[in-house]
Length: 287
Image 1: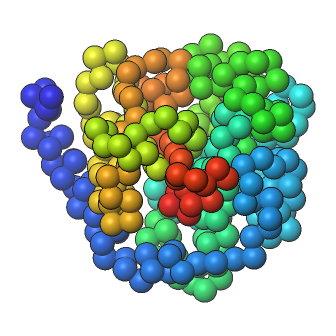
Image 2: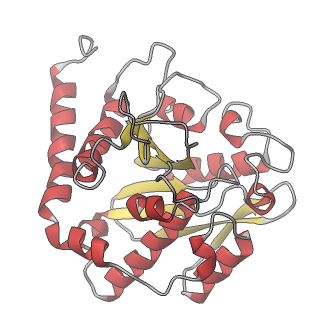
């Protein structure tokens, strides 16, 4: 699998793993603060369905500066917000599929946690990042609680044609922001298990392919290095419950497209904890 990679590539993956393993292993105080973090979460965030305006109002009430990046098919605003001014730029978006809310709820937990660290001047390695977030890319689908947008288009199959206004917002933001990493946040169905285990995949990750041969290049290696480091930590809490999503190449999928354009992209898939239909436990592990 690695035969086509040169020595500089091996050094790259080694360097990436060292950096991210350092973050995960050495920032012990930060990890403990994540586990102990709690905030006055509104009840609607404990449910899988909520109205997009509830989320936007919550962010405004907590003094997050929102930027309207465009509008949906039904003329609903699509907002972004930016955290930090660090050199490494990360672009994250959630609810590309309107009925996939688990990662959005985890994202809100992260935003509140970030604000707390910022107020306490304890950002740590997060000071090195500029993070641009689209909390809800598909507000029409979110309101109707459906995978598709108001034109009944799957936005994660619109990367090449870019026919939909929501897809155009994401592509324009990608072009202007020029991220070093992308985070594509989704939910997965309850049918997925973690590898050959009988355990459900509580979380799954993927470094998307950039060609039909699913070749591993420097771009994918960077994503894989991050996923490897994250998984090493998650195995302490979710042993044999983390999966790898299918990497079959589809140029119409946004993760494959951004990887093809040279940006390391990580697909997050939030799964099902047995008996927890509202996925509150999965939200915690996503966070």
